[in-house]
Each structure stands twice: as structure tokens, then as C-alpha cells.
Length: 128
Image (tube, rainbow, N blue to C red; front, side, top):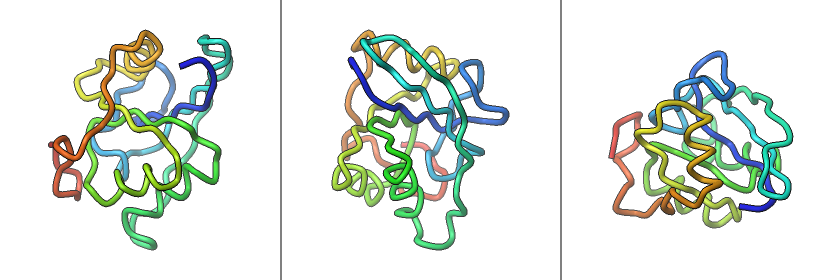
């Protein structure tokens, strides 16, 4: 990845040392990593939105509105994965990363695979 804005579902307080959230829609917040020329240039956090209004599509649309181009996720259902594809956000499978920084580093090195329908779960915070 050369340039873009990466979102990683994270536990409080967010940042590179934070634990990666197990399910994107139910995370505490998102750690946002801006990348330019393949290097991290800015790190910030973005609070999550309530999962009730708009269902699984609420966080998808929220991230799109905040100009996220890439999401690293450990788990999600089929509907949000299709939604991310529709809004042009690339989703990569990052389950097992020890923290946000390691997940981002793996993505930048090309070591993460694209999230596929086979990795989706039934939703509700479960793991694939």
C-alpha cells in the first residue's frame, strides 16, 4: 500500500499498541493510520458509531464518510463485507495480530490477505 487511510478496529485507548478488535462493528474505536509513500505519516482515533441504527451498514458508511480506504479486520459478517466492497474500501484479514501496529506493518509488507466471504462470521461479534 502506497497511500491511503487505514482503519483498524481497536480496544481503548487505540493507537499502535492497542489490541485489534475481534469484530469490526463492535469495537471500542478505530485506530486510523494515514500512509503516504508506503510510510505511516499520521495516527489518530475515531470513535465507533452505535451498531443499532443502520445495523451493520452504519459503521461501513461511517468509515467511508471519514475517507477510509482500507480496513484490517479480524471478523465481520457477509453483509458488511459486501458493503465495504460497494463503497470501495479494501478489507484485509488481520486476525491474530498481537496489536494494531503489527497488523499495519503486515499490511504494508503485503503479508495480509484480502478478507473473503469464507472468513465471514454470522455477525454479532463472533469469530469466523
